[in-house]
Image (cartoon, rainbow, N blue to C red; front, side, top):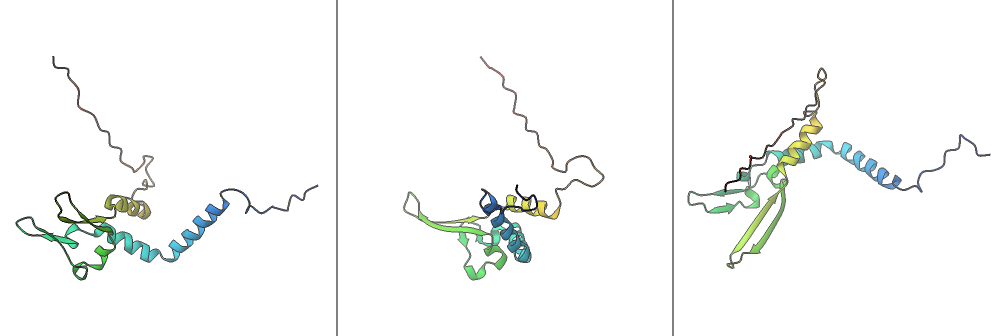
Length: 137
């Protein structure tokens, strides 16, 4: 008869490894929460004018790396060079999703939590109504 106090190891069961990985990652995030917070706030506060500028004629210039503030450098996701269909060189600067970062910061700070004295959820619903269609013959 098996001993009820003997709990078998869960290591062989599916999904346990992924849970252990998530827990170890969360320990890493907790240990580095200041750096994570700084990086997220940097992405949220970066303006396009931190990275490029333009003159009255509409000529765009990407600033040299030494001219870009440190917080703005953290907001850059990728930089690509390519040639357009007319043979002109093009530079693409892709930034991290600012709305997604702001949403993450709002959630982490409790901004989206419901007030304690309210029964209503704090997330605002937006209803979009399509225009009425009228047949014209």
